[in-house]
Image (cartoon, rainbow, N blue to C red; front, side):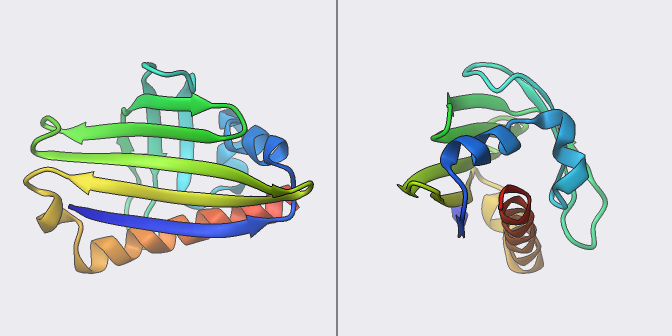
Length: 143
């Protein structure tokens, strides 16, 4: 299993950060990592998510929403040929740490037989760079 977790402090309330994060129609205008999302952020729902890792072609996958707790957490899981082959559980956690300050945690747990082969070296580094780029862009948009 591999995982990536990044954080950024955003000088904005969690309500504003959540509104930006779940405004899927505007995602392409500001997000360099997640280029588009369609679907409804509700538990059990399916999304269509297109990501673009730095220096790589865009990829589209269709994860299932696991958690959609407004102003607190959005989490989904995508799989490749079943959870035991490859799965990624992607999450965004918003912690209101002050009246106008949110700690945004962005991460993913990778599991399955292929996880150690797929998520290593340059793939792991590119994914982490993508997360950091998204965090910075979200911070700029919210502040």
